[in-house]
Amino acid sequence: MSTVRCVECKREILPGEATFEIRTFLDPFPPDGVACSPKCQSEKENESRMRTLLLYNSPLNPYTGGKDD
Image (cartoon, rainbow, N blue to C red; front, side, top):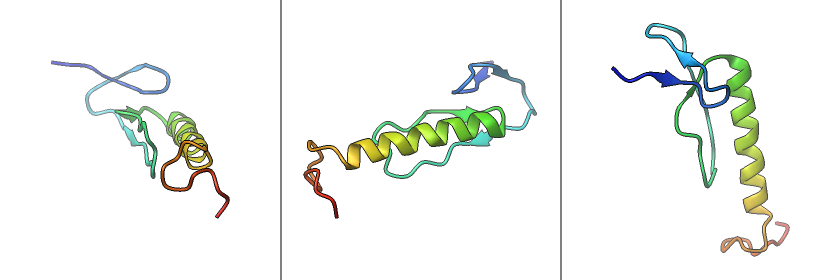
């Protein structure tokens, strides 16, 4: 039986314990897994938002070219 770990704090999540889905939108590298608490969920979602903003505002972005829309 494989163990499930929290993607933020790496703590082992026991069977039957509550898990929290990490919601992302347009993240180029979304986290693969679940969180063990609302705090860990929030941390990963904030990290995902920052990655998305960095990609969107990047001059290397093929869709915007770094332009402010």
